Length: 270
Image (tube, rainbow, N blue to C red):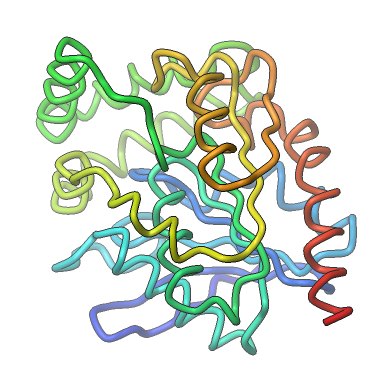
């Protein structure tokens, strides 16, 4: 599998393409790389999909420093990539921070997006109390200064079934945070996504959430809120943390495949 690059006005976005069939684009969360989908990707390829995994601005093999790391800017990167790949339409899967980015892509170019799947996304989120806000702010300030804090967080993010390569993956992720300080600071200081973007998303949606996600006080309630807000089905992954695509890839594939079949069939029929 060969890394490819797409030049956009402010830098280069890294991605790879595997398989044949309807297009599915997998986007990792902040401070992560497209390797987050290393276990899910082959399951989707085997099921007959053309799967693209993308590195976000500042991480993986994308350019290291950008002036803009916003949801809107990254949504624009995804639109540019879809056009480069032939125009889709594609199902966009976004983990964590990237859940907001895929919404902006779907809003900007609805003709290119057949469906959106937020995985452990924050769009929308339940109100966060002052104590939680202070804790998150403190962690955000700490990570760029002490990258090991990111490694400590990752230990909590896979509460039930860390993958077999977790120690090596975690070490590489901490090293990336240590190296990519500019991007790290931008991400951890990012403002919440403007939920008004959801009013411009017209494609079908599927919400996937782990029931033990440490990023949410009540992940089940957040998932139900998101499902109601987007008119989406909700799939809960029992025991999964913030990265269910790597912790329970088979269960996430089982959730995704019916949605992919329905959305891609609808596009083909249209």
